Image (cartoon, rainbow, N blue to C red; front, top):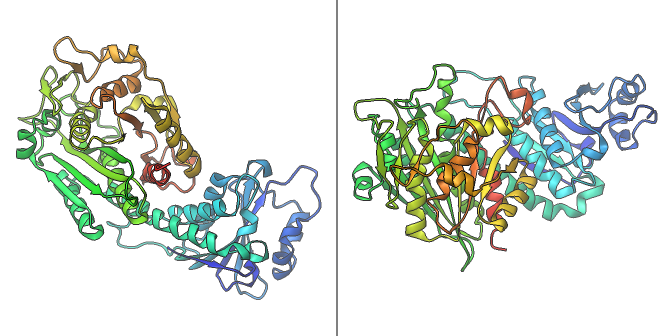
Length: 507
């Protein structure tokens, strides 16, 4: 989708449709909103007539379409809900709903009246960014395997009008930045949605190499022979049952500042997770092609960091393997030695994500000595049970890092909730046979013990863990409960969140 900024009033624009936000109508509110006067005039007083008959109320997800009497376009009144609650996330959802309402209905161009989406909680720049987010992300479709698809909006224009025409320069810069970031999010969704018959560890390594060539990044791929030399027994154990050998993939972005901090982003990349010998139930196993979402998010984060030239140096590490039962598969009861020298007692081969991350975390801390490490992983169903399908669990051993991620979450709408990490959880993952065990005999605190396991491999480095098992993809059963700009399938959760953190990480 292409985006443009126009200084004119929306009613003067030459677009197929115009979207105008309408805050919720008070119970006894009778006066027609003055802000809609120009649009009402252009549409033959149809808006005020509908208002008088109380046919429009401004409720969230309420969309009312009006056609101009002269046949030169249509207007979408998009409900924003209570006026006091109109923030950037409200606008993001509204923009997505407007775009989706026009799918297959012959509208190629869409305009947004900026003034109708600005509020006390959502100033002009935030509103422009939110409109770009919602329109771009809400229009996404995974088309790799489709032979036909319906027509969608191809170009979106934000009309500044008299209120904001003087702010054109900073608003244009905000639009361009958000457009570039969202283009990376859509690219990341495409990679994450590719099924395991194509998206093998080797295939992900090739995507990284191509990205490196495109953006001038250093890319290093460690194959199974090199991983054996490096004593990466965790990733080798998990990938041992598959005919597609594991890969540890490292991407390096030099940073946009002459001297700044180094931030490592590490992702779990299980290209398909059958559970291994601790095999999963058949129901829902088709979704396990998304178990690579953490590593693919890392690929997107590095792409965004290089495109937007964020200040810190960024090291992206993708721990990629396919977890299948097979003659060489690792077994419950095995003990594997990781790159750091620490050993893992394997009690459940379906707790494999933390096992591959042990090597990735140990390697990046030893090799690059980063100032901060952020890992992203579809790690535990327990986190989904605790927080639902739209919130990631946040664990951290550093307050400044945790607070920075929370602030980025507020700005992007990618929700996180900080969860505790205590000595009790650290004790629970200690092993009597090795250093740590990858599972416990208790059902409780599964997300917390998984985080405690990962912490073992970062030492004293400032570290944050994002358990994205809930928001990494959207299922049909949860689609109506999550944000309107999240498509079914892979969401690329974490790309906007961590990129926004990196943009301010030099502070």
